[in-house]
Amino acid sequence: MQKKPSLLRKISRLFIIKNRFEASAIIYALALGSAERGHIYLSQYPGVGGKLLFLASCVAVFMAGAKIMDAMKYEREAKAATVEVEG
View 1 (cartoon, rainbow, N blue to C red):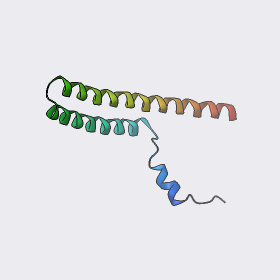
View 2: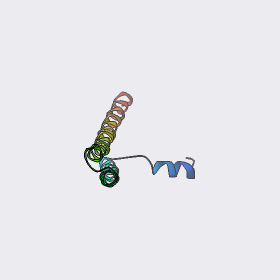
View 3: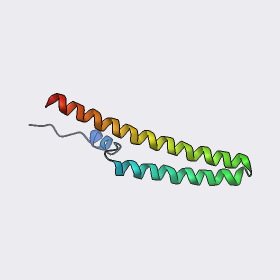
View 4: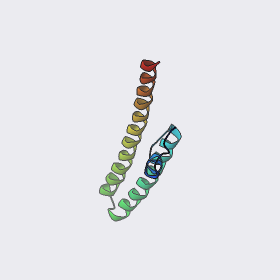
């Protein structure tokens, strides 16, 4: 007989990225926030400084997105290796 998962465990599973669609949705949300923040930078710091801050905020999202996608790939490979060892 299996024990039912606790409420805290159920809630924590909501914050785990399970597939590429969820990862893409998170990256899209990060990009929207970054673009909004970049727009604010452009209005607060006109000229080259604002453009550089806008670029920095966008590049940060690209880097985070790449890291999320890489982590999913490595996790999938590790799970496949575990299944091969067990099977």
